[in-house]
Length: 403
Image (cartoon, rainbow, N blue to C red):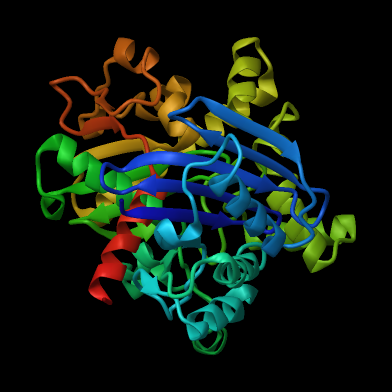
């Protein structure tokens, strides 16, 4: 079997999936959570219906990987006899800066570069580097590791889309520019959409809406990202679960002064206490917002209105940037499951010829399906994302190329 282990490391978590790439099935998946705090493991084997949940001490990512090896190779969650059966490991790496524009075979130099980019993504890149080093310790000698960069897909954006209006020296000296994120998801769903439509991706103009606790919208022209809403960091763009999205920079400095915040405190305020949570006062989950709005909660309704209004504006802007639009897709936890958000976005878009089937939209969750009517000039689709599968596919391809 061609077995690929997919790893997604965060500052205090280590999510994983083991896939059999002969049929692209998931053999096992789980999460080593609360690393450096107290530690908890959740592990599932879908074919056996096995679910393991236990508290485990994870002082560092190394102990998390050691536990991962244990549950994969022993006990009721066992799916392989040893780690030597794994063909390769694919890692989701959030930030590749301008250094890495495609999926890359991992070397010591690549790990050093990923760690060096931590200033651009402090919450993610250092943990990614820690995971790469820890994984190397527990793998069979010679097992290749591959880095799939979230920012790579957006490296096709032209300067007019990724440059900011700051002095040019800030870009040259400090790499301050729009990078974009969710690239792995946007790449997966746009290809899946082109297959579903039966049209070459190279001939399509698509607005891809990845909506979840973190959200981004990308203009994809001919299979290439030409603009996206997330910027220098994932804070930019849309209103999100706890992130404020785009805000007038002067409002930021004004609020800093009023609260007496340091730069770090202001960053925490915008990233963790704003968005749905700060606006609605209800919570950070879109389901809570929609339920509260349906019960007449005014702040929740305003929050929902802001989100759908912003998405609508970006769709119109990106259609103008691409000189046309063939399809809009919704993906991610909100995009795939919230009929309220999809319906709110597509309402009053008749100027673009967008018309959705209200009945189909309201009764569809998490399925690949077209929800626009036959009369709609722009097709509207729900496209479930599968970043882990794309990472596994990329990993196999890179390993094959480097044999």
